[in-house]
Length: 289
Image (cartoon, rainbow, N blue to C red; front, side):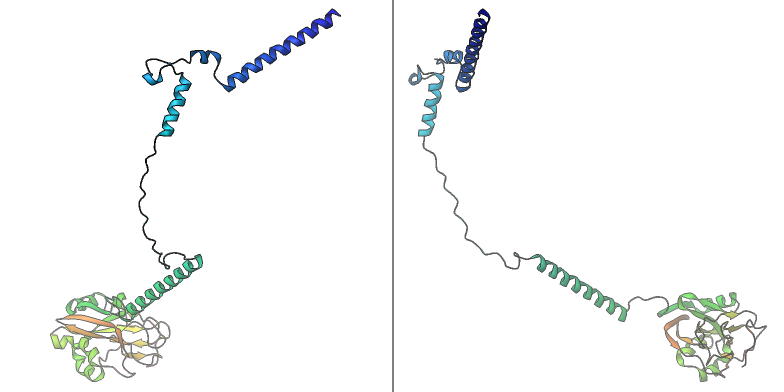
């Protein structure tokens, strides 16, 4: 019995202790502690005559009421500018319109570039190499190079062969060739050089093979079908329909210029102004003349 009574007393005491602790926590959460309230006394050094005897809380409330009573200064607003409607071409462009305009612009640039390239092709400026006028050099220097190369001088930039034309054959040449060809052939006679110069196209007039020279015969001999030509490109044998084609030339102050854009058909079969025969063994088998 005594044990049960002691247990009940302990439970009651524990309940009282818990109740007191919870009340203290609630009071601290709601407001200031007792010690803080006791120390919340007015500071005479900080108060004016009207504020003597006020606590800190009373002082704050009085200051808040004073601020609420003060008139709020109004600020004049800046007048609004009149509304201007935006440019319809600058706004409201959809994604589809943007891509359509981009495609049209690219097409315009492409057409402009193609037109410029076409004009440049139709009116070439500063063209050099094959198809243009090539200034080869002074005729005495050219004749020296021809001799140094066993009678045949090849110029790859013009796809042409240069050979010497003997002065003794010029009179016959005047009756067989055009003035554009004679200008180089007769340069030796007309301007006092030891010989003239003829510019021959490298292609065989038969089927277009490149015709090499034969050092032993001093002729041009085509390795494809055996066509043969003397040193100035006149046909001497084989299936070719004519002599080697040649270029129009001009001679100004002893300087030879070859127009590789103006190809003149070679002389007809039977033309032999120089009378040159093979000077040694042929590089290609003998063909019917």
